[in-house]
Length: 126
Image 1 (cartoon, rainbow, N blue to C red):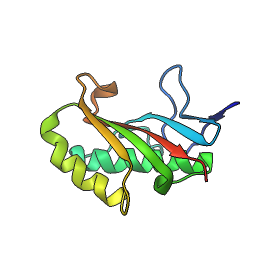
Image 2: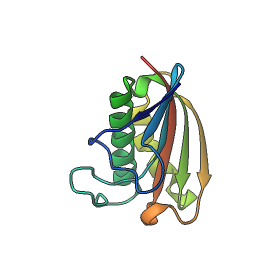
Image 3: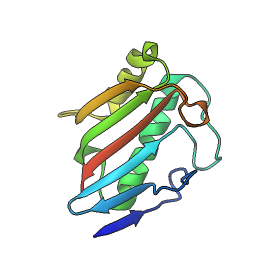
Image 4: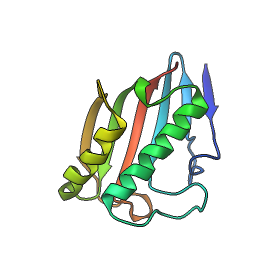
C-alpha cells in the first residue's frame, strides 16, 4: 500500500509528485530544494545555506511520515556544480552523525528554480 505524505513544514510540490510516499517499511522523500516553506522563497546565501535548508525540508517531510534523519538509509545529492561538494559535505555531515546513510552525489545541470543543491532520501519508518 502507498500512502502520500504531505506537510506545510516543507515546500509544497511544484509539479505532479508527492513530497514523499510511504510504502511498506520505508518512506521515499522526493528531492527537496532550498525553499523556505514559510516564505516560499529560496534562502539567502551559497550552497552551505542552501544545503542546510534542504536538509531541514527533508527532516520535516520525514517527521510528517513518522520517521527522522537517523532512519535515513540512502540519499542522493544533486549539485549544480561539483566545486560546491566540500561546502555541501560539511553541512551534510552535521545532519548525519554516527552512521551516515549510503549516498550518491552527482552533478546535475539545471536543477529546479536554479537551485545549487537538491537532496532526495529513503528512510525506514520508525
